[in-house]
Image 1 (cartoon, one colour):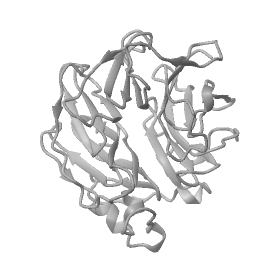
Image 2 (image 1 turned 135 degrees about the vertical axis):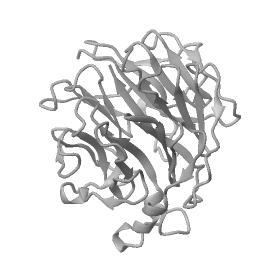
Image 3 (image 1 turned 180 degrees about the vertical axis):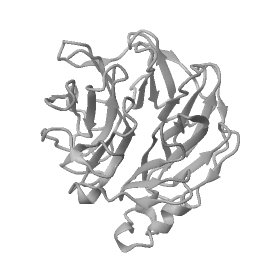
Length: 353
């Protein structure tokens, strides 16, 4: 193994083992062993739901904790807090600007969203509107994914679980709810789903990830409980991508465009939020077809997140909810799998150099 791999886990209320370990974990190159990172720089009982490695500096790592973002400039050995101006700073997502290292975004619980123009030293809260399709669930809403159009970085999208999608076309100064097209799809019988709320649009509002190809401005791919969906007009209208034609797994927890090939995408697919089956699928034609990528590894739970390496197109890692991490460093020909220590039950993020 030539890369450093990070995994983030949090407390998981549905875990059978309530004493499971959580926090930030690291596996250094050629060690084959996970290290639970606990030091005085990070908060007590650290929970990590987001990990981002700067593609231009592999030693710079950002994590989202229950008290806000942290940054490491030495590959995870030491950490600096980047406090948010909020009493509710549980951080679910972090987004880096592609060309300006000073600009970053953070998404938090209760659909919070923040922007920094000085590398996280200070933050401005952005006035995200409450989505019209927001579903009242048994847990707080959260900004689970943020993305921007690489060809126009002022075009920013915020995914809210369970509330759909909002959009800014001016770098976060103003926002608009664009979840209406997703709710319209819920008029189809097979896209209706209600588990914890009083509306059948819940499944379509159960946002998990959104991604944009750098060569397709305005084209979004969106992952929800009900599958994968595509918009070619910046989120105004949506169509179903039909991932069910290629996989028996349609619960989409993650979707990412390859950082090396704008036509290639990866998606983390499973049966449900809590399940005993999951997999990583790959498309090389921007979602027209999908094939299983993880070479039939033994996934014992919902596949949660995918981590790509900026240094190598052959290097991809993924994490399953109940503490198992899978990785390939040869483009999917062979895979390794390992268990995080301490009976981890709540993986939310994986990243690799």
